[in-house]
Length: 401
Length: 134
Image (cartoon, rainbow over all chains, first blue to last red; front, side, top):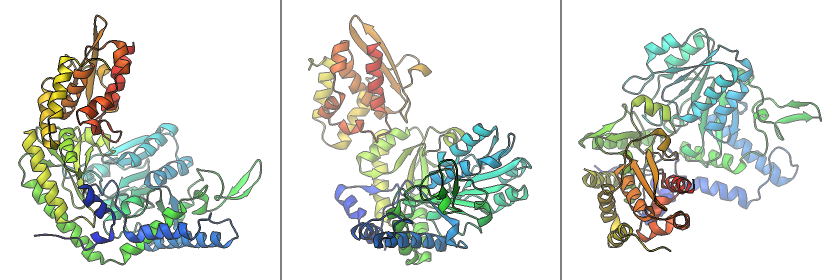
């Protein structure tokens, strides 16, 4: 059965890939952008760029309005109470660093931060370094064989010293949804904050961070069909007030003197310097575009393609899928074949997939694997992409075995 | 440009007649078996910057440099083999002048040296030059 993507034609990159003989299956690393996003960027610059929140001239007003409209669109997308809950950052990584610095003053030596074993570096290193700065204990929750946080062990390790739980919504390596409702309940019972890394999760379906039990939720534009260098930190209004400013400069300051200053409340107080105006507008355009599509059709297409991918992998001898992915991707290892060799052979055939540890080195040590090959899909992916991939995989395995 | 060693000439002859990715890949897998492997894999010989682990050792034979290299990846062993085919037996001066990009280009393998590749071949070349300069 062929599975064409009705959305593919909206993404100009695929015409270029076709000309170059490229099959793009690396959407979990970054997604291609629809024409509507390219048009929004073009329109913003063509009408005249301007800085936001300061100039009195007309281009400045227009840029500010477009920028703040984008903030409102993000708020609507996340089902937030107001646009004031939306902080623009440069990406998920910056949002998580903002939290690790912004909450630092609340931690005392001996307090505990809980993460899971599957966190990618962006949701590990900011907490690891905060723990080192403040003498905190970093507690790591192990996984079940399917690739989910083990809730029984989590219940033992989330305790009275836990001040913060930081957890990915959807694993970028295993493709597994994490049991956020249970975990956030455990953390909240101890009075801890819950930080959800939505970098992968936000791309698949609509999620209200509040319904997930999150106090903070971070994601990047570039995986959500929007430009790079724009990210979002959503916070519950009460949680946002716990944050201290972490980057200082223009825009975030209310009144400045040589020896002391006052700062804006969130979100402005966390947006020092000139923000990525065009990228924010591009994110707004991506959300408009996504909102205009039928959500059930998007999800159905993704799921149907994933099932085809998993079935094709299961049919091949010696191919092992890591964990039990539920959406978006599969990470594989092939018995007796080095992942670098597989990656080389696929690369030679124009297959754009990702090989290695996927920015999650500790997870791979845990799994006892040197690395994996990750095939990840987007709403523009189709069954032709999968056919090309499987043909290339079979060629590669024939050469390597 | 120094004269090619016998081994380097053999690599050049083989790879310049290979047409297409499949033939080149087969050749790399064949050359992988010709790589002078390291005797033991010691941590201090690991080259950082490789997603696949690579070990490189060095010794002198008179004023000539001799390298050994090991990896679990067969393709990487093949690439290391054609690299060492060119570099082994060179003096320090010849090695310092060696343009690895040109060499791999002659073999049709220059893309393997690009910065976005995780194979770390660039780091290996740097390690080799550093070892010979000691």
